[in-house]
Length: 215
Image (cartoon, rainbow, N blue to C red):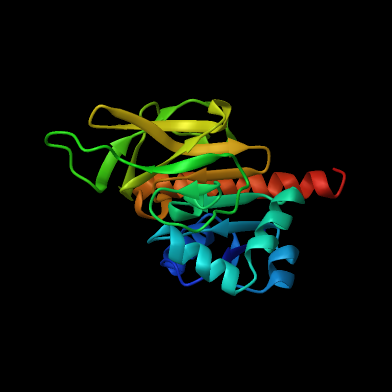
């Protein structure tokens, strides 16, 4: 049973993410301690709210360099919602620099007639990395739950693992590279398919454990 640490930086409902991971067979620990994060088998960075306060909280707790080190080490890492956005260099929402794990900008949806902002509710994914472990057992056009006014625009198109269309705008709904996966939607609020996605991450962590011990 893998041990997954959920990063605590006062920016989201950590317990819903934990519950979903536990249902998928993981043990979870909510923490802001670097030693605990490094000892975990996998790490989840959730988040709800605004870009600048998120980065301020991470910097105040000394967590920004810790997250960079965790990712560089190859540890399985899952970002959720705001936890996706702050992996990038900067956001149009504020002035703080992001973690800069990936090049790109967090942009606001452009206004359109009859377009609701924030993008809130159920919408369908278009998978652009269909073989990604996170998407295992998902049907085509899976419906998941979104709540956001901003979306990431990666500088490298190959990072995008899924897109979603809101109005006339097709935007990044998930990114992935190596040990890092992150989603704009909320798997913990996305019913059975969301639980499947969390279970897929737990399975990914377990597979990395096996590789780590040379099996």
